[in-house]
Length: 128
Image (cartoon, rainbow, N blue to C red; front, side):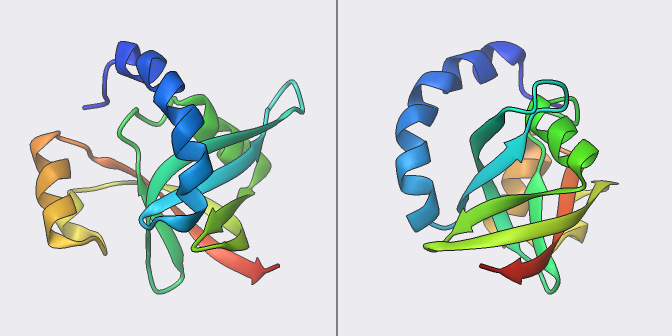
């Protein structure tokens, strides 16, 4: 169950601060994506977790969030993670129980309680 849109609107204000720390504080990622129609570059802080092939991001605001739609339309994005810039490709929507994903145990439990079932997986293409 995605978080209410009101929470997303509220988070715009703290996100201004979170954007500054996201590249340095795992599991935060600073995701850079291009608008589907505007072509404008956007940056969105998200929580992402390393997997064998790349990253998995729980879609706590649902699969209709603008940044998700932008990444899917573009076929990838860039992220800043642990002070490194990475190019991510092959975005794939996955609908599953969080307990079946490569996530830390506490995160699995929290996402289960929030009834989050939508995830985005991305593959690391190349480090810059």
